[in-house]
Length: 415
Image 1 (cartoon, rainbow, N blue to C red):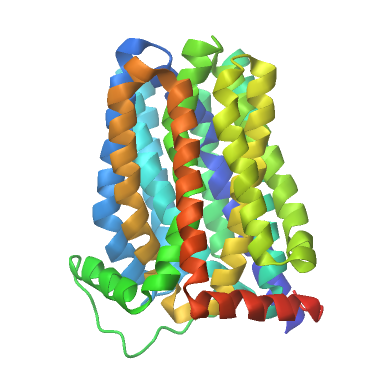
Image 2 (image 1 turned 30 degrees about the vertical axis):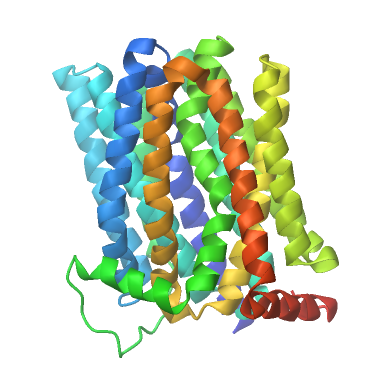
């Protein structure tokens, strides 16, 4: 049984690895094209807003479906659709000759929606391919295996930019997605949907997520507040390319290196956080990583040169994934697998509107305040959110009980 579980998880990790790496070269090229000039920055911001609005509408339905059907089936459909989209883009780009910022913008919207499905589906699937006593170790492995393709993708991207073009990047992405799809067919998922759940229509997902928030308000709100470093990172996906191209005067290779630096720090976090959690507990681990992240945000803009930028990018790369490893382990251990889709959907129902609001504000003000000041402000928002989470923790016996239970288990030597 243990060998079967290990095989399932290895196949799952490989599939996830290939999916995450698949679009890196195309993604970096598209982001750089849209952030490299002041004329295209507005289009870049609008592109991200359109993506988030689509995700906001679609994600509640997705989260409700993930508790009703096999999660692997969702990702197989997602992979197949992305293969069709990239194949169509390859034909349009190569033979029709559409080579302006619009094609990059359309690609980024589709890719953003694709990855919103990827993250939510794989996060729900991890409980169905591993055992509960493995969750702490698996959360660390998930982070490592999630970031290592970003490092490899950054290296590949730098080579693509130097020797090849956008067409070669599209072909590589298609090949990796096909390999990922083959691995998704190679393992069985242990998931039995809750028979009490009724079939849902598209609009019912929001209602279901809202009901879940109402019934589990303190836990959902606490995890949402811990999610603010992630919110700062994804809004930073708008700010940092502008900072690199317009403040540091770098090119696509520097943007690729920046992604690689972040990913290397995240791999380190995935490697050491399970051990740190065992020694100092989840509570201290989460807030120590939060402090590291905040330092990276508030100090970075005051040193506008690449060496300092890469240093503080490692603070982000360790802080956010470090929080995620601890947070995801707690969630996996305390949320039943048949509720994980709705739980993640509830978090996203709160997170996505905040992302939309911040991105809109940043897009409007970046020309006046500059990307560096907005990175500083995002760090201060994380500080406020973490302070609110501490207040919520102090007033909630449920949250204290969760951390106390996990600490006792860790002290007993069970990961």
